[in-house]
Length: 141
Image (cartoon, rainbow, N blue to C red):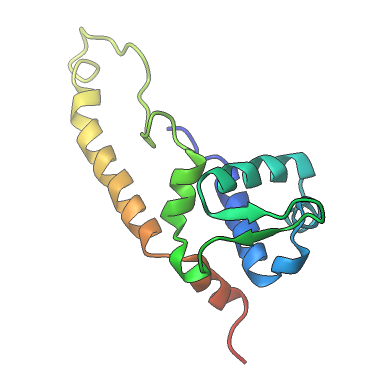
């Protein structure tokens, strides 16, 4: 199984930060919050921009959301970052022994279950928005 890239959680962090403090969200500001290199943030912001989730102010810098936080789902971010290989979260080991009763059928048998697991995860990501996350980070006073 290939682990989902940390780019996903960094992108969620980035979008959440832009939602909370849009006027201060330069790559350097976000990098300090994420505690990573600004180059990584700029690459992720470029990807989020191509996906139509943010735009970046030329000159003065900073970023802003192109949609309200309540309309950006974790699934939108997951798709924007293309964090899984060939659209499949789970991969299989290569060349199991075809002479083995398990090796000859394991991929076929397991694939349907793993596709269902991925679909369930994606359904869950579709139900969670940046706004919902922000409501948990900044509870109403």
